[in-house]
Length: 370
View 1: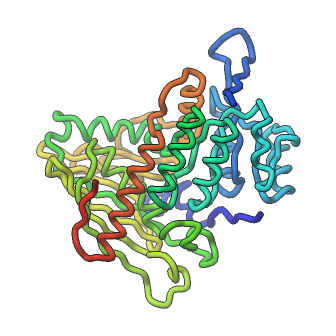
View 2: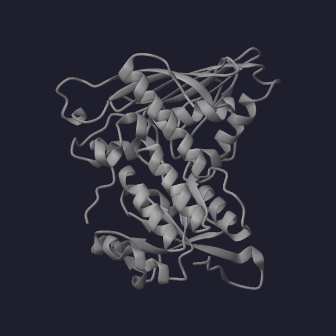
View 3: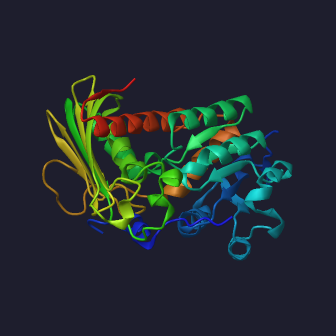
């Protein structure tokens, strides 16, 4: 099985910025509880796994890589040797289910095209493994629910990899956005994510594999920002979408989507996603003040300002590796039998809202969100 995981332009965008810059097997290394670690198997070793996830384990305190699942044996062996993974713990997709017999694997991290998330999350749960899944959770709400049900039935934990919710800049932004002293009553959030996508043959432009275009990929960051900054769930959405005529990249999926979310409090989220140009920022407007971030969704170097003017490099916030923080959080949940901060239900909510956005775009009318 051969899977292509991304393009250089998207990787560069996220790394810097397109705008501004059955049971859990716990191994104990010593008698000290602080030295317990959780074994992760990465399913899919494309650009994200090789460029971000595998290197991030060096900064993890609780998570460590112990297995790889890939359709490319030479690449898998190369990465295993590089990160100290036993060659016997390399699996192909046809023999994935045999991971059930490997006690070294506690967590399966799904890093596959969106259309494959549900299948492998369900199979991982049935193999007795906890599941960490890249966003978006799946292509449809029904697939998301099936993942939740499978993990619940297997008594395994399920977490969606919303890395920004685990890193300090976003956490500080959430604190300020919900602060009566800093912002007052929050009235509006604007959030934009976009980059110019490349190869028209890549999986992100294939509807079956991706589930949609920019909205499913980069637009989910804007949607997430509107939700976590307001601390509310939208009740209604309007939207328009666009694709450049005759552009071979957009035969099956949308290029750009603009969507407006209405919240029960009266706050509004004005959001945008695009595969046609770069954008990477949010701004929060309230009755007493503002906060703004640009870039806000890159892998590193995100910046946050409080107030209308940008002075210097923004607030002094000690940053960390998003992926190490995310994986350590899930490892802690496994070790301590705790619920993850971003469970499957969080991913399901996003996919339900995305479905409503597509419906609103197609119908040209406001759509209520259940």
